[in-house]
Amino acid sequence: MEAAEYTLDLRIAACFVILAGALLLGMPTLLLKQFQDPDATVPRLLRGFAGGVIVALALVHIIPSAVGELNSLMTFPVGGCAILFGIIALVLIDNTMTALLAPPAYKQHIRDGLESNNKNNKQPHQHHHSAAATDPSDPKHAVAVQRDVEAATAAQSSNHVHQCMRTLGASSWLASGSKPASNVRQYVTAYSMELGCIFHSVIIGVGLGVLTESRSLIVTLMVALAVHQGLEALALGSVLALTSFSFIKKLAMLLMYSITTPIGIAIGIALSSSYDPRSVTSRAVQGTLNGVSGGMLLYIGMFQLIAEEFSREDMLVRPRLRLGMYGALCLGAASMCILGIWA
Image (cartoon, rainbow, N blue to C red; front, side, top):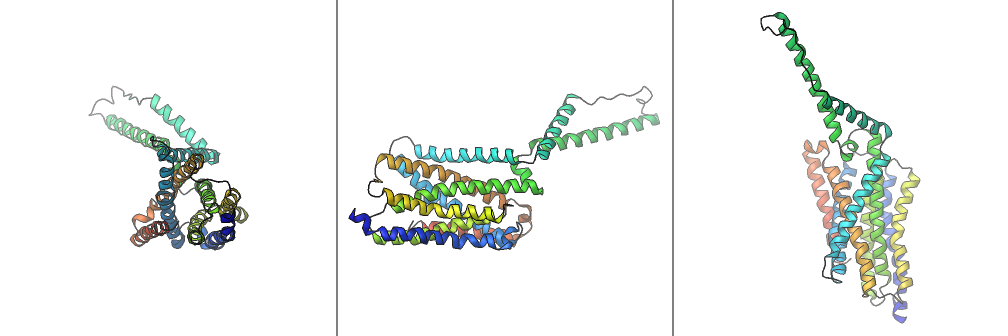
């Protein structure tokens, strides 16, 4: 009990320092109108930076910890299973939310295209020529041939359109210029990222809250986690800024993320007198949650942030922007890798 009281003041202070760090870096993305423009250069560089932050967070901070915790409990690589579960869970969430939020008119457009394509496949093109028209010397033959060529070209063009419509995936149509479709993609990314970040933040908060032995270690972790959570808030805010949510909802989502680590610290403080981080149960729970959140964040960073930003068409013809995006991505990843020294 004396050990817990010895570091209690620092653990309480950590709640406010980490909260301030998250809000300090996250709020500007919601307040500055420039971040609401999906084509503005600075916000795009920031989203490239955010992609590096999230992927490095998953691969350097979370996944190794999860694998270490879980694989030490048994010979079967259960740590990898937890990460895989997180990825699959987010794929299902992503796909389901996309299907539910997609505009009804667009869904009907796809159904109509599929039905028309099926009808075309069931009705093979037939040629009907009169006896006169089959004579190459007859002028009518040239007219008939021209009609056949035009009909075949039209059928091929129609079939091509329907085939393209059939193969369009969620990411393809959401990446198009349609504003409702673009909104859905932004909603799904924002909700998914919020979920993954909250899982992870509670775990690291509990981990800090149960520390009772070293004041210097708590100070080091407090500073490192303030920067750590600030960079995550910056990444989350850059995604929220693009959505058409009201400012109140964006602010609420950012605040919800920002307070999760302090809540985790408070839980850790409450459990510190009885919590044994070396027990099998504690390691299993912490490792599983870390694995799931790590898989989620890896999917978010790779597919919803990096892939979407780097696959935009103007990247092919704007070499300076492309170079800047590469630099921002590497800088974001490097910043989280460096923080891995302390946190």
